Image (cartoon, rainbow, N blue to C red; front, side):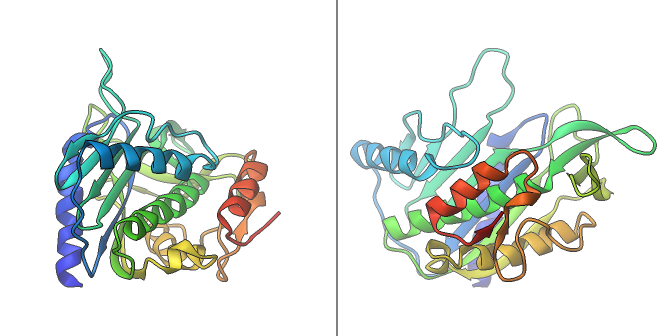
Length: 263
């Protein structure tokens, strides 16, 4: 499994150049212990494109992943929105590899003035971190099933720092715990948050998906000074009420993918 964790690190490092942006990214990467040997071509790329569209259709926030044709190589498929004039970044990025590994990234965070000093920070919504981690972990696991690579896998969840002009701006986790959107933990100035674990991907295609994801959330959020995730309880139940303003969407999404939730 050490070898698979090293493989994860290389995938994230190689993809970081594609994530060049002026805001942070949340990246979820999986690498099966028993690799597959898929072979991609234009036809299989179209099949995966259609399959992705079905997978993300019930996500609580619209992400047009799969809306474009992938970049097809024999060893990987890459999905990213087309570059636009004057646009410095992609809002999402996904790689599916022939060995069953997958790397997904979404831009997260908004610039906020952090109390009490009003200094600028990148505010990562704790709820967004929770549902995106769960959603991408499930998508990665379903891809592993698609290419017959289910089973034990190395998993990494990473907050990738921006590399644009605001790369020195600290990152902070925010939530609505105090009745208003505000800081939930410490600022993180220099490093990035990374959580790693060995996970049975079969579990991620069952109601136990959230119990597999929660330790990763605990590890990641603690690095930002958040001691206990508010959005997934220790038994894996999604607490919809903490997704302020989005509770109905989260509840519908939880029902759609068969994970336990409460209002």
